[in-house]
Image 1 (cartoon, rainbow, N blue to C red):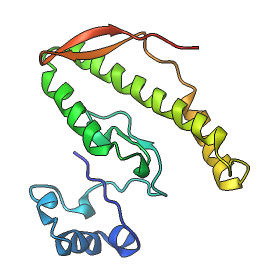
Image 2 (cartoon, helix red, strand yellow; image 1 turned 45 degrees about the vertical axis):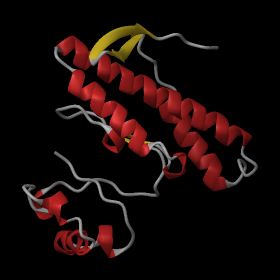
Image 3 (tube, helix red, strand yellow; image 1 turned 90 degrees about the vertical axis):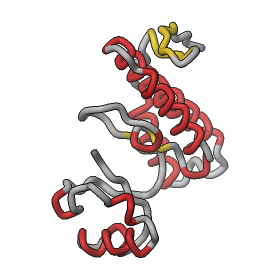
Length: 165
């Protein structure tokens, strides 16, 4: 189980006790209920809020735990709900593999689209945007699974991925 926090300053960069206090002060202490203390957890990386994802571990990730699209894309809640439906429909290891393949395909598609948007950006030559474009290109250039999952009548179905060139 993991816990991701977004904020500034002491909200996310203080001691574990400071961060826990900030979460509780914000009225979100319920997130910490039945969790190990933050001091007992392994701290992850932090950075500017842009496209981020996680890999490995156990379980199926949904929403931002799988792929946090750029904050301005306004896709977070819709994507999290969709992925929760996929996760709930997993009944077999094949289903799990197909849902995982779908997440890989979704990440690749998002990074490809993001790269094309940055290419057309007015400020694409500015170092911050060219650095971001390099990051997106480095991770976006991955093979896409040939098969992925579709959800039909609450069941995971095999779907062939068509590539558009």
